[in-house]
Image (cartoon, rainbow, N blue to C red):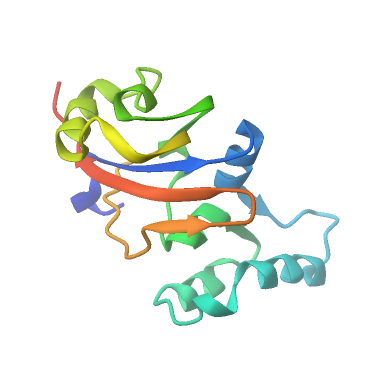
Length: 163
Protein backbone atom coordinates (compact mmCIF):
# COMPACT_ATOMS: atom_id res chain seq x y z
CA UNK A 1 0.00 0.00 0.00
CA UNK A 2 1.24 3.44 -0.89
CA UNK A 3 2.05 5.41 2.30
CA UNK A 4 0.94 8.62 0.57
CA UNK A 5 -2.61 7.21 0.49
CA UNK A 6 -2.76 6.15 4.15
CA UNK A 7 -5.27 8.13 6.14
CA UNK A 8 -7.38 9.20 3.16
CA UNK A 9 -10.92 8.30 2.24
CA UNK A 10 -12.23 8.53 -1.32
CA UNK A 11 -15.95 8.91 -1.88
CA UNK A 12 -18.24 8.00 -4.77
CA UNK A 13 -22.00 8.56 -5.06
CA UNK A 14 -24.24 6.59 -7.33
CA UNK A 15 -27.72 5.51 -8.28
CA UNK A 16 -28.42 1.79 -8.28
CA UNK A 17 -31.66 -0.14 -8.66
CA UNK A 18 -31.01 -2.26 -5.54
CA UNK A 19 -28.59 -2.94 -2.71
CA UNK A 20 -27.73 -6.25 -4.38
CA UNK A 21 -26.75 -4.45 -7.58
CA UNK A 22 -24.45 -2.13 -5.61
CA UNK A 23 -22.72 -5.03 -3.84
CA UNK A 24 -22.42 -7.02 -7.07
CA UNK A 25 -20.75 -4.02 -8.70
CA UNK A 26 -18.18 -3.81 -5.89
CA UNK A 27 -17.53 -7.54 -5.56
CA UNK A 28 -14.55 -9.28 -7.09
CA UNK A 29 -15.69 -12.00 -9.50
CA UNK A 30 -13.51 -15.11 -9.61
CA UNK A 31 -13.47 -17.78 -12.27
CA UNK A 32 -15.69 -20.59 -11.02
CA UNK A 33 -14.28 -24.08 -10.60
CA UNK A 34 -16.79 -25.40 -13.11
CA UNK A 35 -16.36 -22.43 -15.47
CA UNK A 36 -14.21 -22.95 -18.55
CA UNK A 37 -11.42 -20.56 -19.44
CA UNK A 38 -13.36 -19.73 -22.61
CA UNK A 39 -16.53 -18.83 -20.68
CA UNK A 40 -14.55 -16.63 -18.29
CA UNK A 41 -12.73 -15.03 -21.22
CA UNK A 42 -16.11 -14.13 -22.71
CA UNK A 43 -17.01 -12.29 -19.48
CA UNK A 44 -13.72 -10.41 -19.67
CA UNK A 45 -14.34 -9.52 -23.32
CA UNK A 46 -17.55 -7.76 -22.23
CA UNK A 47 -15.60 -5.91 -19.53
CA UNK A 48 -12.86 -4.53 -21.81
CA UNK A 49 -14.82 -2.09 -23.89
CA UNK A 50 -13.30 -0.84 -27.17
CA UNK A 51 -13.86 2.79 -26.14
CA UNK A 52 -11.51 2.22 -23.18
CA UNK A 53 -8.56 0.90 -25.20
CA UNK A 54 -6.77 4.28 -24.93
CA UNK A 55 -6.78 4.28 -21.11
CA UNK A 56 -3.33 4.02 -19.56
CA UNK A 57 -4.54 1.35 -17.13
CA UNK A 58 -6.12 -0.87 -19.80
CA UNK A 59 -3.10 -3.11 -20.44
CA UNK A 60 -2.39 -3.35 -16.71
CA UNK A 61 -5.92 -4.60 -16.07
CA UNK A 62 -5.78 -7.06 -18.96
CA UNK A 63 -2.68 -8.58 -17.35
CA UNK A 64 -4.16 -8.46 -13.84
CA UNK A 65 -7.54 -9.98 -14.72
CA UNK A 66 -6.44 -13.53 -15.37
CA UNK A 67 -8.74 -15.43 -13.01
CA UNK A 68 -10.77 -12.60 -11.48
CA UNK A 69 -12.06 -9.09 -12.12
CA UNK A 70 -13.78 -6.24 -10.31
CA UNK A 71 -16.10 -3.95 -12.26
CA UNK A 72 -15.65 -0.93 -9.97
CA UNK A 73 -11.86 -1.19 -10.12
CA UNK A 74 -11.94 -1.49 -13.89
CA UNK A 75 -14.38 1.39 -14.38
CA UNK A 76 -12.30 3.84 -12.35
CA UNK A 77 -8.83 2.46 -13.18
CA UNK A 78 -7.87 1.64 -9.60
CA UNK A 79 -7.28 -1.31 -7.32
CA UNK A 80 -8.40 -1.60 -3.71
CA UNK A 81 -8.55 -3.99 -0.80
CA UNK A 82 -12.16 -5.03 -0.20
CA UNK A 83 -11.50 -4.87 3.57
CA UNK A 84 -11.12 -1.09 3.20
CA UNK A 85 -14.40 -0.54 1.36
CA UNK A 86 -17.77 0.45 2.80
CA UNK A 87 -20.94 1.06 0.83
CA UNK A 88 -24.51 1.92 1.69
CA UNK A 89 -27.67 1.80 -0.40
CA UNK A 90 -30.61 4.03 0.50
CA UNK A 91 -34.20 3.37 -0.52
CA UNK A 92 -34.71 7.07 -1.24
CA UNK A 93 -32.23 9.20 -3.17
CA UNK A 94 -30.96 12.44 -1.63
CA UNK A 95 -28.66 15.27 -2.59
CA UNK A 96 -28.02 16.08 1.11
CA UNK A 97 -24.41 15.10 1.70
CA UNK A 98 -24.76 15.04 5.48
CA UNK A 99 -27.59 12.51 5.16
CA UNK A 100 -25.67 10.33 2.69
CA UNK A 101 -22.52 10.30 4.86
CA UNK A 102 -24.37 8.91 7.85
CA UNK A 103 -22.88 7.67 11.11
CA UNK A 104 -23.14 4.03 9.93
CA UNK A 105 -19.80 4.52 8.18
CA UNK A 106 -16.91 3.48 10.43
CA UNK A 107 -14.95 6.73 10.36
CA UNK A 108 -17.61 9.25 9.36
CA UNK A 109 -16.85 11.49 12.34
CA UNK A 110 -13.25 11.81 11.09
CA UNK A 111 -14.17 13.12 7.64
CA UNK A 112 -17.81 14.20 7.40
CA UNK A 113 -17.24 17.84 8.40
CA UNK A 114 -14.29 18.18 6.02
CA UNK A 115 -16.31 16.78 3.13
CA UNK A 116 -19.17 19.19 3.87
CA UNK A 117 -16.72 22.10 4.05
CA UNK A 118 -15.13 21.10 0.73
CA UNK A 119 -18.22 20.06 -1.22
CA UNK A 120 -21.05 22.00 0.43
CA UNK A 121 -24.18 20.56 1.97
CA UNK A 122 -25.83 19.55 -1.29
CA UNK A 123 -24.65 17.57 -4.27
CA UNK A 124 -25.75 18.65 -7.74
CA UNK A 125 -28.06 15.67 -8.04
CA UNK A 126 -29.68 13.09 -5.79
CA UNK A 127 -28.05 9.71 -5.16
CA UNK A 128 -29.13 6.52 -3.41
CA UNK A 129 -25.70 4.96 -2.76
CA UNK A 130 -22.36 5.95 -1.29
CA UNK A 131 -19.07 4.06 -1.66
CA UNK A 132 -16.07 4.78 0.55
CA UNK A 133 -12.53 3.49 0.02
CA UNK A 134 -10.25 3.98 3.01
CA UNK A 135 -6.49 4.43 2.60
CA UNK A 136 -7.22 5.52 -0.96
CA UNK A 137 -6.52 8.97 -2.35
CA UNK A 138 -8.19 8.66 -5.74
CA UNK A 139 -6.60 10.98 -8.26
CA UNK A 140 -7.76 9.25 -11.40
CA UNK A 141 -9.05 11.03 -14.43
CA UNK A 142 -12.31 9.05 -14.56
CA UNK A 143 -14.92 11.12 -12.76
CA UNK A 144 -18.13 9.42 -13.84
CA UNK A 145 -19.27 6.02 -15.11
CA UNK A 146 -22.64 5.05 -16.55
CA UNK A 147 -23.92 1.58 -17.21
CA UNK A 148 -27.31 0.59 -18.51
CA UNK A 149 -28.79 0.10 -15.03
CA UNK A 150 -26.75 2.47 -12.83
CA UNK A 151 -24.56 5.56 -12.68
CA UNK A 152 -21.71 6.51 -10.32
CA UNK A 153 -19.74 9.76 -9.79
CA UNK A 154 -16.52 10.42 -7.93
CA UNK A 155 -17.17 12.99 -5.17
CA UNK A 156 -13.80 13.69 -3.51
CA UNK A 157 -10.85 12.41 -1.48
CA UNK A 158 -10.31 13.70 2.05
CA UNK A 159 -7.58 13.18 4.64
CA UNK A 160 -9.04 11.65 7.81
CA UNK A 161 -8.71 13.81 10.89
CA UNK A 162 -6.96 12.34 13.92
CA UNK A 163 -9.37 11.81 16.80
